[in-house]
Length: 515
Image (cartoon, rainbow, N blue to C red):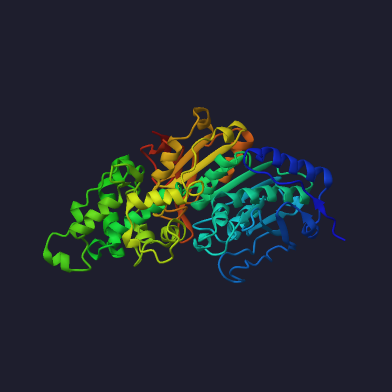
């Protein structure tokens, strides 16, 4: 007969630290290590355990895609898979999973992984990566199914779940499950996320500063209200009138022109722009020179209106009073512009915010968007949920928390200056020693791109949080057809990689970190 483990009431907000401590103490005193299947009887506040099952090595099948499709899980070790539904409010339906490696393979720590876009699914691939490292790991769908925002229409509690509550509730529950299974709490707990997962990271650090000892925040989609207003502003510039549209085939034309003007500004002509803030792109050289060029669809030039649009996209969105709303695309990101601007209509993510959250109207017409008026409406609708995340990291860093941020300079989804601006506004001054930002030349959104885009952020965070060694240099690589063809150091901002003057420019050993 499965034994039942009772856990004390859950708390949040100002009482988070006391609540987590109470749960840890109660689990530790009420049970030693449990079997996987016995976790089905675990009793936690607002929680229903729906699955507790031992998974044999390589046997996991992603329920969303089935066997033989998508990410491969063949190399996973054996683990205990726990699934649960959390209902912290009457309208909540938060799905989470917690994966627990066999005791002999557990590194004694927990790592939570974040989501992308509007979430809506458990991050199995990200969990698998951390399970292989020996972590107990957890992920949530944030309270709804499907990567869209229709869930929020007339469901304010579900919006709260997406915005911040699901991640915290998941973390508290996962720690209790870890404690019940192993008979001890995790020695360290980390968060790892990019894009929406990066925004979730910053929310956790500021709203629930005691949840994690270390946090990785990649390309944080923050503040979401302003980010989506910028995305709609761009749609107005390039989609409202056909004459302003830039064909996808012309993105490479702009990119080559940008590199011609700015590649060598860092002292090295290598196909990468090390610091796009120093690049003031002039589109004049690629403007069509004759009417014949204008008529030739395949010509390697832009119409005057397309050139004006391209220049505007590399600058910030501004209100009618001149206030900067959000930074624009960084020079060097042109090859990826199709993600937001390559369709008939604007990117679905901002469309969903305005249709289902701001205006509560699935038929809202994006062509009516007005930056001043509709951003104000978005700020009102997103107050306390999707508005800007606080830069006050005092409570998080006071208990030893470490925040490791990164962002690709060629990000085609979330402008990279968003992270630079957040980093520059971190308070109090004493917290800044516990925050590091790494900007990645040539990397797209959360990965990919022409630059060195493969790197390990987990090991540097471990060394920092567990051994007091702050990261200053992280080696990244770029591969072509499965073969590494370039390595380059990523440097703690505001430093960048500087060529020593001799040696292979594709070898990280020939670069130093300097301003």
